[in-house]
Amino acid sequence: MQSAPTPGSMVLLTRLSRVVYRRATEDVIGMSLKEYMALNHLREQKLMTQQALGDLLHLDPNNCVLLLNVLEAGKLAVRRRDSADRRRHIVELTPEGQRAIERADRALESIEDDVLGALTLDERALLHRLLSRALEGSSADAARPRDRLAG
Image (cartoon, rainbow, N blue to C red; front, side):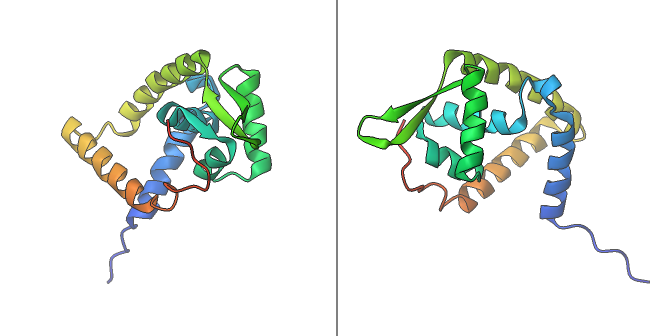
């Protein structure tokens, strides 16, 4: 009798991300995960074009505009025309956006503790390093969007 094949890493990552997605609700983290990811990119990059943000989030331009409308309505981010190229919009995290993402970080830490509770602190640190390295390797093309601005 043959044993059932064990799921591959991508299957396990997908399952784990679904667990996190179900737990990281707007009620828990104070925003949607999509909003959190956008604010997180803005925190890391400081200044970013609207197109580069959409590329990083894998959003088509219309959905990126809708997301930015929500972030602006909540005073979490601002868009302004690029003075060097009036066709582009620059997106920035606001001070309120910074505070909101810090609150969401704390809520996500609690979720991470629950989801990764079976791992030791050393195993969590190793997992983080491995996932970061994998993401860097798979993001080689994303690291060169057409019009990303330096922070």
